Image 1 (cartoon, rainbow, N blue to C red):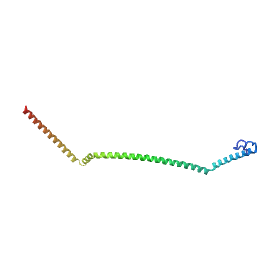
Image 2 (cartoon, rainbow, N blue to C red; image 1 turned 180 degrees about the vertical axis):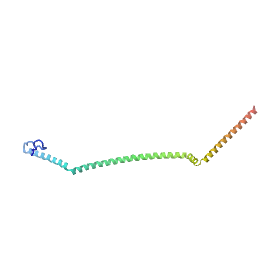
Image 3 (cartoon, helix red, strand yellow; image 1 turned 45 degrees about the horizontal axis):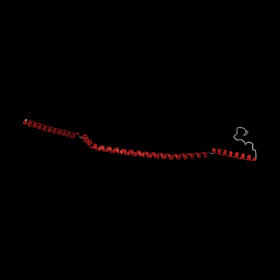
Length: 159
């Protein structure tokens, strides 16, 4: 057997006691240290207890993260809702403006649609309109020519 008092062991006997009271005190201290050591070893050997403690820690952390994630998700949901509302209002305004533009252009587009279906009436009306304009111009020029002749005759008669 090896002697633990020399070198390699973890136990060192108390140095020489000077009296029975000191010896009792040293024994009590040694028992206390030995009890603490035994409790530490028992705690390390208690795998179930350590697993339960670790599980409780992880459960607490998971609960805290759940609360944090719910809060983040709620904030993100509010932000998305605000953006969606803003985008919806913008789209509604654009659609309203586009509708007004279409209403303003509707007569033109209706005429274009009629022309695409059957261009003859439109062409005929354009030709007839052009003929009326030309006739109006001819009538106006005729009046101007008549007035110019009358003015010349009057001038000649006066001079």
